[in-house]
Length: 466
Image 1 (cartoon, rainbow, N blue to C red):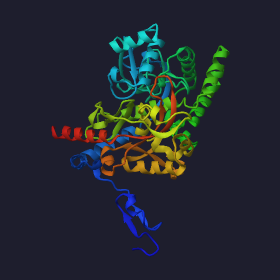
Image 2 (image 1 turned 120 degrees about the vertical axis):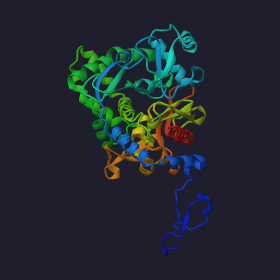
Image 3 (image 1 turned 45 degrees about the horizontal axis):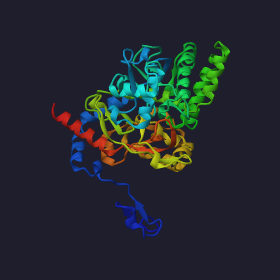
Image 4 (image 1 turned 30 degrees about the vertical axis):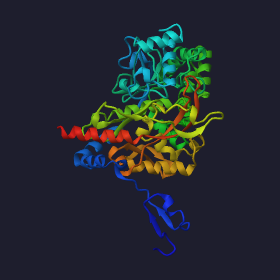
């Protein structure tokens, strides 16, 4: 007993000490290793070797030294590998059979088929998708990422974020352009308004942005995000500052484009879309995380993604392999008239931002985000602090002002997750179960523990077989 101080140290459930005097109890955040799975805990200890630590140092260095540059905005078929020939649509999350897809993803695929004019109506589009005449594959398998349903079609313009200073100079990653809020393809809407907007983005917005980039030169995305973090963004669900900074960089060039009505339309669209920079942040994170894929013995997470049915995890040491588990809806705030019963299970590739160290990992930089996803500013700081326990280090490019300018927690280590029982926190939007209804809220979701248990078992088997 410490006079005037903590008298009880509780390692168990809080209810055990509910009757103790206020201030007398210090609650220790201790959880059984490997979520209580003794076999997985033993395997994790066996993987914690000098070889693993060396591999993780190499992996996190590769990730954190990547500085993506926005070099172009081009039609996907010109730059995204593997979709130029035939009828191919890309979707968010790990691979999934068409028959198992959720409502928003099916709706987005139908809309993309109509946009490409592969079908005359939704019924024909659905038949082509169900029959396999239109092939569907994950965005991640093509160096790309997409929010929510994540559907990407060959004619859609994409951000091209590269290691080098120009198109084709080094590795690249890709993301679709953000449509804004409301009735949009990424939530499964596919009526005439949605298709008309997508075609305007293809014919007007994409080419205008590409022309502006040709004049401005490459834009350092990491620097842009770092500045946005200092202005209250977190790089996932709040992108007001990043969108403003990007627009400010390109607006003088866009304003000079001809015809003038084209320039006005593009600037008006950017001014009305606070989420436009989200997809750019995602492409930059994808480029960084892909730098670690295939580093033998590394336990660094290279991707977290959801398809509305399953959560998928990738680890550097296991290459392109997915570890999956059922995914549920987020816990958060709902728009008036909606609730958990209407929510679709979580979906989208946007958790690539958390995988790098943004979003839920950088919530401390964005107290305003708590008004959108729930909680308080203190909760945001607590979330970032907690993520330090499961990451390999701080990202030097992403200092967080409320954390004394320490770098955002970066590089999820599956061994640290199993040791602490702390799961990665992800900021996310909440989609309605039905295609086309749209976003009905936003909140927080954690990665399911099963994917980490599966990953450690695979890595242990892989090492034992050498």
